[in-house]
Image (cartoon, rainbow, N blue to C red):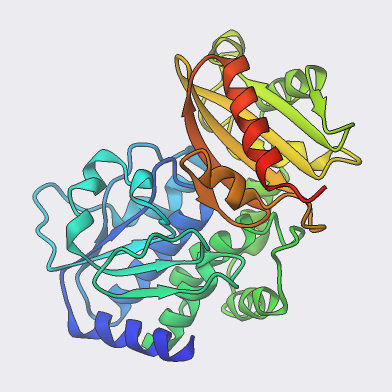
Length: 318
């Protein structure tokens, strides 16, 4: 992997006028990677921007606002961060798909696009890979370190998910040593919930449906619930983590209705390996990691549940 990091850094040094792409419905990892890499590229004298993503939520917007590309910006080199598949490109980013010079990712389901790739599925967050690339480019300043810390911390649930490794902690420690205000990041992402968010969680918990003799659970967020509570995208961010908190459950499914009869599936599974989340979601046209994956499926809610259960049953070990 170290050779891939060196090659990626060398590739970035060779080019200028760089555009960085994030994925559809951006989370802290893709947003933090894009902001951190953009800050680092500017630090070494490059012209670099991030393509504006209309799906950005309030909790992650601040990382990217200084780096949005101006109208009419014509990049020479395009980089994607934390994007595993073409289906995750939002419309404006899709225009650059065939021009990607470097794809940086950490998903086992990465589809292999881009003229060059820097991919390591052993990393808990794409932020770990981008950190290594940035370190190869020069000394990491707080401007780059803060969003990279957000990337690493959010994709590990503040270092409590089973994907967290010793390297994750080493990267986080190095970022803290730059003097960033990590407490503010932790407070924003892990210690603050709006009243509407709490109401969403209350409804999800109150209407849980169990399967596999209590080892699996469905939690649903229909559009009608979002409308009734007047909840925003920011209120609904990372609801997928809730299903994994139920005692005795090693297969948690959160179904969120994005458009009428279009459901975002978030599957979270246990470290026991009984259900491989990415294998299940690949059967539904998605992908991700062994313990955290997703897909988008069309259909009425009960039909979507049936399809999810079929996919899980097809890959489960017991």
